[in-house]
Amino acid sequence: DVQMTQSPSNLAASPGESVSINCKASKSISKYLAWYQQKPGKANKLLIYSGSTLQSGTPSRFSGSGSGTDFTLTIRNLEPEDFGLYYCQQHNEYPPTFGAGTKLELK
Amino acid sequence: EVQLVESGGGLVQPGRSMKLSCAASGFTFNNYDMAWVCQAPKKGLEWVATISYDGSSTYYRDSVKGRFTISRDNAKSTLYLQMDSLRSEDTATYYCARRDWESYFDYWGQGVMVTVSS
Image: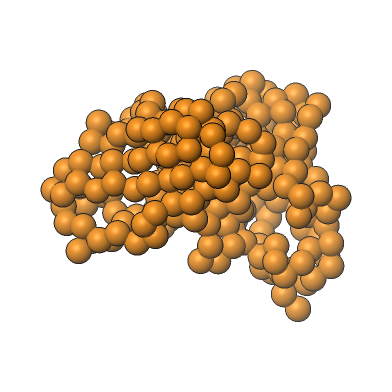
């Protein structure tokens, strides 16, 4: 199985700041990396797929980059609703595997 | 609007069975593969199983093979997960998710909690 290593596990920031979350695959997954947001009481939300393609409805302050084994989710000009948990997932091969998550907290 | 609503969770004893359901609406259910993804308390997301749009193909993570069965009723737009021989390590929130053809999950339900304990 492809192991996904996410970093950092915790991140504190203030509204208006920019943050980056990293995801590293144990082998090349080409461009096939998705990012999800998880918030209490809400359904998990797909933000980005295929490394850099924004899902319909994802604000443009979110961006994804990378290919092969190294990927980054960047959130610019943080809004209050952006705080929560973020997960990466490789969608290159079976079984689909997720990173352990990054908790983005208000500083 | 796409909606996925899970039901059927609760407390169950080790070794017993439980069946989860996921009612889908807002899209043509029989056009999409569907999946179950779980999340143990305070842990990350873990894929459990996937079923093809017509039910002809199923895929499972190794730890549930032979114990869990994913199925679907396209006439009812409903996805199921039959869980047998439950273990304490199966304790988790189970999410129903729609699988895009490129294998990411574009819509999720809110999840249903399953607790396996005596």
